[in-house]
Every structure is written in structure tokens, then in C-alpha cells.
Image 1 (spheres, rainbow, N blue to C red):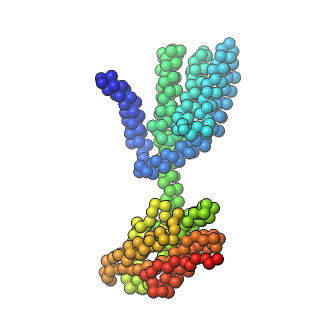
Image 2 (cartoon, rainbow, N blue to C red):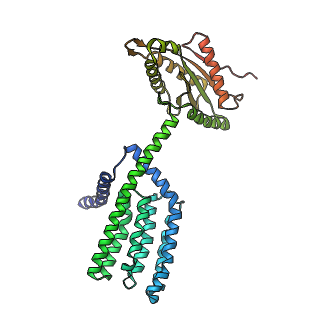
Image 3 (cartoon, helix red, strand yellow):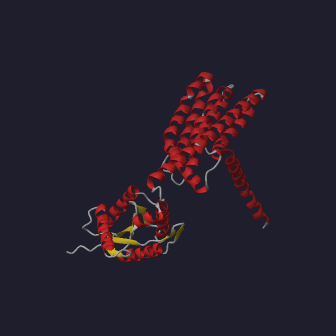
Length: 384
């Protein structure tokens, strides 16, 4: 029991260290809301995964080409150091591969940097004053890595192995004063790289947030927060193609607020705007996760329901109709309430595209309004 407890404590140690490092770097470099930060991290990983094959290969070629420098410093040992460089670069080249989806891109980046920088450090340590002469190259590669990986806790983990290797070999082969000066230069460069990563992280987070805001504004109606017409038709066109290809059901409903102009004239446009927002909330609450709801005009809305038969669409429309009828909004001019008319159309062979299906739902909506409003109408079926 005691041994198991000690083993558990041993395993928890690295986890606590990593968690502590993450917490400290988060305070330093900043963080977005948890869900947004996860999306930001995924975006960074995708970007890093795209760049790693090309940049890693360029890094590896540069490390191998520096073998010419080895021959200039010490021709007798150059063959050994050149083989060492080539061997470690070839080992690290495994990390370039995009066909390793099971391995996180952060580990791949750390593996590539560790093997390639390790090749520079090990080969330089075998040459006279090699670590001192190679110090600009060893520290210089920190900066592009800091630009690629702005998450400080990951950056420090990537730098950890080469830093320890440089410290151990430098202490072993360099005179004490030379090692102290070299270590100071290394630490200053490490600090500068960390500062660049922090600044880069702030800039990229700000750009990511701005990009998300622009995408949201492009895809959503500014008044109601529902899907905008263009984006809804884009999504619906995709679902229409899938339903047509695989012979799956698809239904849409078109919704219109009854006598909306009368509401605006009686209570004012702020009341009309508030009613549109509330209608969007209550109708969205009646939908499944796979359904989506958007505003396509002043008081007109469309609900797209993939994998839905007409009977299910009618039941959903009835829930929305009752939910909207229960709305009560208090204004100085009185209580605002409304009803809706709904037209439903199910996908049939005669519908050549989504616009044809939408036109069928619009025609059904027109019949609902002509038939007295506050009602649901189903588009007629095609007769053979």
C-alpha cells in the first residue's frame, strides 16, 4: 500500500509541475475564455502542423550543412560530428510527418527542435571551443520557434531538453568563466525568446478574437442574433445536397409574424425589435441540435430540419406557434403579443435546389396567411 502511494505521488509530481508551469505562464501571457482559448489552441496547432514539415526540413538541412563549419574548426573530428549531425537530424525528421495524427503537434515540434538543436550542441561540444563558437546559432533558432509557438508553457517545455543538454556539456567541456558567460548569454536569449512569445501570443489572440467577431457578424443577423439569410442558405444548400444524394428526408418551415406592421405602428419599432429577438429565443428553444433557425427578412424566419419527416416538422411548428403565442412583452404603451403563420415543405423530387424547396414553403406560408393566420399549412405533394 505504501509503495503504491509513493508511486502515485511520483506520477503526480510531473503533473503538478506541468500544471504549475501552465498556471504561471497563463498569468504572464494572458488567456481567453476557456472555450475560446481551446479554439485558439486548435487553430495554433493547425498552423504549427502546416508549417512544421517545411520549416523542420529547412532546419534539418541547415544543421547538416553546418558540417562544413566542423571541417574548418577541426578536420580530424569533423567526420564524427558530421555523422552525429546527420543521424540526429534523420531521427528528428520523423517529427516532420503530417501522417502522425495520434501524436500531438506540440510533441512533434519538441522532438524536432530537441533532436536538431541537440545535434548542434553535441557536435559542437566535440570541437575545440565549439560550444562558444556555435552559441549564436544554438540560441538564434529560439526566435523562430517563439514565433511559431506563442504559448509560453509549451515553448518552455520545448526548450527544456536542449537547455539542460547545453548546461551539462558546457559545464563539462568549457572553462568555468567561459561557461558562466556562455550560460548568461543563453539565459538572456531564452528570456528574449520568451518575451517574443508573450507578445506574439497577445497579438495572435487579439487577431483570433477579431476574426471570430467578424465571422460571427457575417453569419448572424445583427438584431436577433439568429443565422443571417446568406449563411442559412449556404448551410441549407449543403444539407439539401446531402439529403438528395442519400435519399434522406429534409423539411423546412417558413415563419411570418402576423400583423407585424400593426405592432410597430402601435407600440413603436423598439417593441418590434424586442419581439423579433424574443421570437428567435423561444423558437430556437423548440428545435433539436441538428436544426437551425434564421431570419431572412424583416419579420420572416426559416427553420431547416435535416433528417425530418413532414409529420415531425408539423409537430415542431406547432410547438413554435404555441411558444410564440405565449410571449408577453411589457411596454409603456401596453403588452406586446403576437401570433405567427407557418408554411412547411418537405423535400420531393420536383425540388431541383434549395431555392425551389424554399419557394414551396413560401407558397404554403401565403396560404396560411390567406386562410386566417395563426395557423400551419403544408405544401401540397407532387402527384404522379
